[in-house]
Length: 191
Length: 130
Image (cartoon, rainbow over the protein chains, first blue to last red):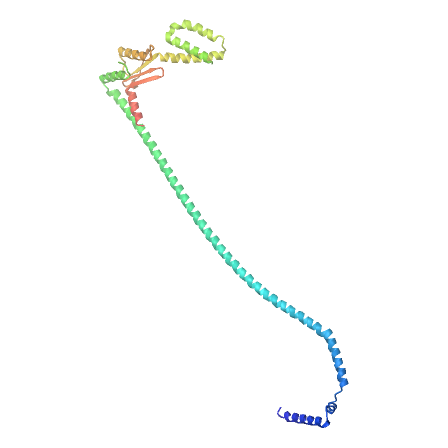
């Protein structure tokens, strides 16, 4: 690079001198072999080629690129939306799971309460029925006891009467019988 | 059986019970006149009621005196007179021995029973314990 710099400077200086010495741009143009007609023709050709290319290549390519860009943008947007939807769905799912869990807990709690109530009710009913059965049994026992006592009393009384009758039949004297007969007649309203 | 026939059967039974066998010559033709125009079933019905009324009328004119020891005649007379006065109709005494009474008497007139025996006293005592 440092070797090239002096030679370039020398060429530039020579060119400047040649230009000033020839008296204008014509010699320089001639030295470089520039042909304005050729340049014009090439320019026209270039414009024509550029126009054709613009018409038939560049525009469809641009359209395709736009389309691709749009598709990519749509895809990205769709991905973003999908991501958002997924996040939303996850959120909803989490909420649903949370609600379901809460509801399950509520149901479980309600069921537990109901089962406790049912258990208590059954326990109370069973206790009450047992108590009633016990009372009925006691009443039945008492009635049976009273009936037996009455029967015993009745039997004792019958035996007492029987024995008394037999004793009186044998032990009553004639005088006592006569006195009782007289008393009986008096009590019947006679005399 | 119609009510009139019942009244008739009762009247005849009471007449027989009142007058005894002396009333039979008058009652028998009356009975025949009553029964003749009736059918066999009507006669049976009439006679069944007549017998019932007759039994009742006779029973109501008798005083059954049950005893354990034979009562004196004076005692029987006292009882008959007292109950005849009470019922305002003469009663015929019927004496029945019943050693189960132990002592005292049991008087029965028709459906009425007056028990003044030791046995009834003991029975009342036994019943009062129930």
